[in-house]
Length: 83
Ligand SMILES: [Mg+2]
Image (tube, rainbow, N blue to C red; front, side, top):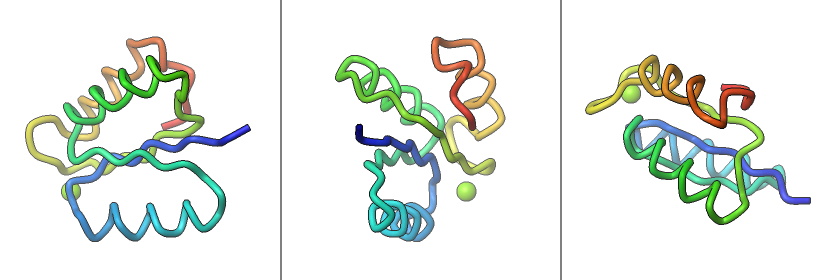
């Protein structure tokens, strides 16, 4: 079964580096540019049946930071997902 990971980071360099390493390790990776995009990506992953096993998030991001994003995740159906 494919293992999915959601990366949330406003830095293209960080996103690209993590995506490269995790894909090399056999994970499916979805990347989001900030917390709001992260929530949208979670919704689309859920509707396509590819919910993430793990969420890796930055803290400092525009629009919605990693703290607010994590608080939203913990109030959602993804509350049990390690992040
Ligand atoms: Mg940042």
